[in-house]
Image 1 (tube, rainbow, N blue to C red):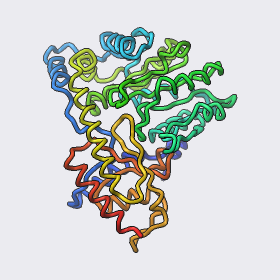
Image 2: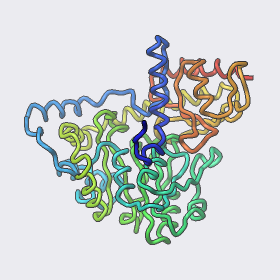
Image 3: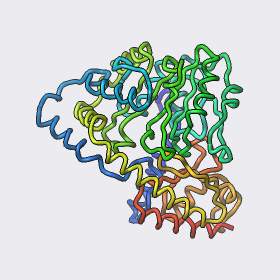
Image 4: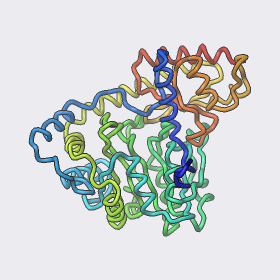
Length: 398
């Protein structure tokens, strides 16, 4: 018997979580797997953030239900950060704190989409965007940036995809999975298109903001005329190594913030009180640990690019942020080791897991079926070992 709803039956499983589960299955059989599949920092949460959680517990003041949109101190701290660092005009009334950036984005889609509304999604995209749109009864419309474009679809592609049903666009910068970063100039071109269409909103996923190797992070909401048209999504998981704490947020026009608050009040209510107190410490406290993590990722990026350059058939560009490399592996399609034939990047990811005992993610779920995603949120030792194993495994394909 299957009495699940149609909307749930139509929902795809997260490809990154699925690959992580396959890796765990290998480990349960005693096979050591080097995981380069999940987008999770390998660093510990900064010490002063941990101490803030202990202090909140010891004070005994934060055991009750927190406010649905988040503690005022946290929302104020986020608004001040966005004003100072991002140039976004906002107040705490524009901020809603949720259970991670994933929850934030889902809240937005459920708050603005009606059945049949179209959402233009920049590909490569984070795996959950498409299914989040479908869950809200919207229609995903994909525009793809190729590796030759450094994975950045053009403003002309955006303009061509807009119809009278377009309700929103969504992109991530720095991008998961490609590491692409939209410059201020590129965002201005996107804004020029959006401002010609009165009812289209922009969802800017900036969760990797602090892992940016270009020297400057740009927010589209800071462009004149765009604050009322933009939902900026961010959180604490990546920059502060707080994935398990589950704290994300949006900065949105006040009418939409109120709508999300209404939705959240009927679903999750406010998120964990202790995690929020730690988030306050993260956003208002010492930022050096975040900078140190970003510097380590930048060094690892070069390590991985150097190792990939030694593998025949791998085509990689230089990512500008996040902690992923997204190489084109289509030269291996049609090849075989005698037992397994590679037809897709998903096939190749499964082959690498089985043959090299390294987990990566095929690009199909990211909207780029010629690529695989390799996370370098791992130690130098594991990265070197993993890339050596991948090189050996690929050499067996003829």
